[in-house]
Image: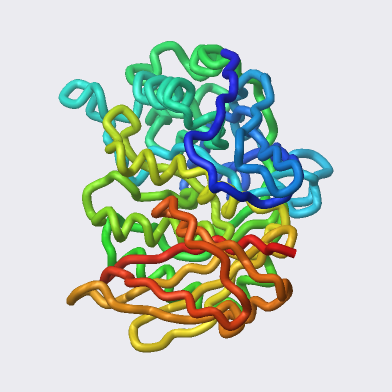
Length: 389
């Protein structure tokens, strides 16, 4: 299967300079079989790169015309360091079944939603035809509950023959997969995320509280993952378009995970994802921030009066800033600051600002110009600042 790229559906009128970059390698943070005997499967397609000549870009995405590949864990790649192996230079992106489909193995009663080759093929098809793959969502992962109750004669895990009747090789061939070894380029930091605001907010707060330890450890080829659990090392999952979060709360997760340079893995049913959720997750500027080539994890600047302000430095003097209103009640609240108060003063000519999730250009702001906005309870404002220098 070969997929061709197409232009991004939206771009700001002036966009960041940058350089073309592609990532390779695997999406896993755990190595080989875990203590419970779980092994994971992932599909990978080469990701698109941003092509940004001068300050004109975000005009289009380019995609390498290369086939998808399946990675079946075989052990750590020989001679490869988990950090310095040239892989995963930007956070991995893709689809993950666990949070949405859990360990649903009853294909008799629920054939469309059980963990099976039918489900994995359906999600891979949606990534291919609905524009996800060319935006960078290149991995399809099969986390748990795919294995049979017994190992084979050589003691190896094998697929459940009822739910994966064609076997893993046939599933691989379905999307032109090849077998790859496993590498370790990201790691869990926190318990499994649940489809609730409390779970999401606790992870965000923990990252802020522990950023002096976490932030220096992150960078190209070595990513902090806000969602893995020790007993079930699942990759980070975006819980957008599930059932527990409002749309505004889903925006919080998308914005903060972009600021944190976290892996972007969708865990929802791509066959019926809402248009507003799809529009958000396919937002080119949101993806650009997450995939920034500097790979610097953002930091919490301040908590004050139920506002949290997070900042991430990007390539070419650009910045992303997230303003979170962590109140759970009341009306939208006014927030005001200046680039100078945010510690953004490299370019004295000023910055062009964008409301990333609102897809709005906010104009040009100098060092002491006031940036003001209203932020909904359990909502977020994500800003992109592009220097005029």
